[in-house]
Amino acid sequence: MTMDFNFYMDDITKVARNEMEACGYEQLKTPDEIEAAFNRPGTTLVMVNSVCGCAGGIARPAAAHAVHYDKRPDHLVTVFAGQDKEATAYARMIFGEDHLPSSPSFALLKDGKLVAEVGRYEIEGHDPMSVVTNLQSHFEEYCEEV
Image 1 (spheres, rainbow, N blue to C red):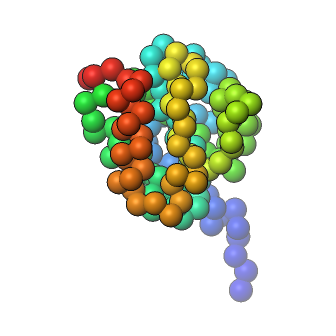
Image 2 (cartoon, rainbow, N blue to C red):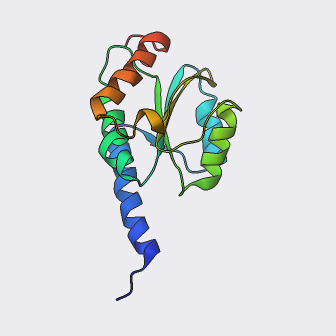
């Protein structure tokens, strides 16, 4: 039996991308798209997506639910680690030298500058609601009431 790995991965990534788009997140696939999105004024939540189980079972559900809050980011975007490699590398470069690259993860930008992060170590092994609470604590500090 043979299996086409790319066919399998395309199917998984399509589902993962669609989940994020259905929640209102804009897909960023190129460094130019990253630059344009990160230069928008206001707050931007970046979800670094992944095909791993903690992305599908914890991070994506948390991304969907966290934005149902009085204070929330002006912009919701996502980049797919392992798929949109150049875009992900460029995003991580913008996050700065102190950023620990991980996926899945979240980064909160304010006027293009990194102000808060939720790394994989704060996602993997946690339940989605604890990640939602963590994200919303950052929204409380950095975002405006809608």
